[in-house]
Amino acid sequence: MEIAESVCTSFSDLAHLALHVLGFDHEFHRQEVETYVAFTKFFPNEKHRLLKSIMPNPTYRHMPYNPHSVLHMDSFQYASNSQDHTLLTLHYQPEKKHCPLCEYEVVRKGNDLHPLDMNNLNLLYGCGTPNCSDEASLEECHESET
Image (cartoon, rainbow, N blue to C red; front, side, top):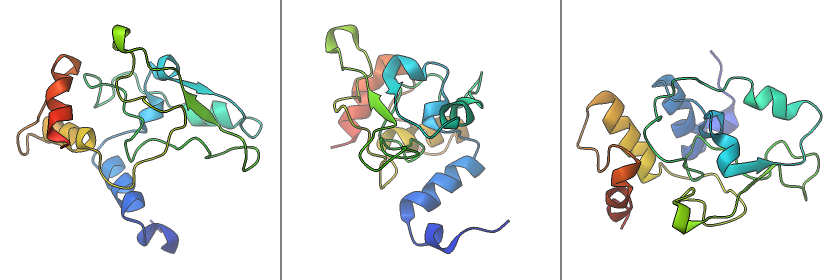
């Protein structure tokens, strides 16, 4: 396997690859992705290519959708030009507990492991103590971010 030199200089890219090796897929490959984000202007056929591997039983299936994960693409990846967005979060509706982490319209991929990324690792591999184990205990996850 060969890794591009540019990837080796970015912690977020290395963390992204490491999470894949540990069994995690892209956050935007979740079955419920279009409940949380809207895909907009892609190069032709990019949306199909990006979403074709939606996993039926992902490792994060009990956790909330996380647009800040190092495994999420940002709003400008695969855009047909640099001013276009390829995806935007749908409006956050706190009364419906609709994507509690989608507080901004534009998605910016995290530069570090998000607390929910670390929590998912703890849940899957039984290392450390997870701060939360499902969406019902999400408030505890947020408390751990401070």
